Image 1: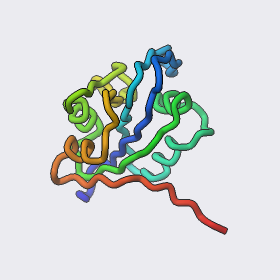
Image 2: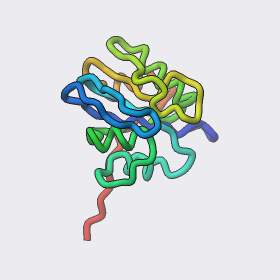
Image 3: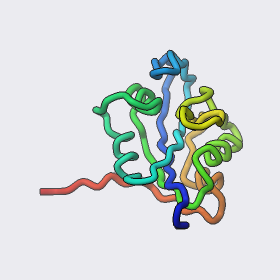
Length: 148
């Protein structure tokens, strides 16, 4: 991994039917049926950030929290050596059957279209790797549980 490169992640969820969901400052957003991939970054503690997205009980703070409270996350990938979350979201949205929606989702601190990408079919690790580029490392996120 390049020193100073963004530490990105992609969290996937499924919306089984057209559903309106209140998303904080964005207001109520109508999510169409389908798969949604949220692209995020964490300068530090990336594993903790992803684990938070996967947790069922948490305070609702970010746009993604509201989505994952309504439709729990199904899986996540850690992505290294990519320019940034805006670029990765754009590359994912360029895949066949994908688009960024709703506008501005997860993009409160930047000026891009948004960090949520909808898909007609379930994206796989290979899709994320393709969007990230050949030099990127894409690994499945595994929740570590300690056994007493």
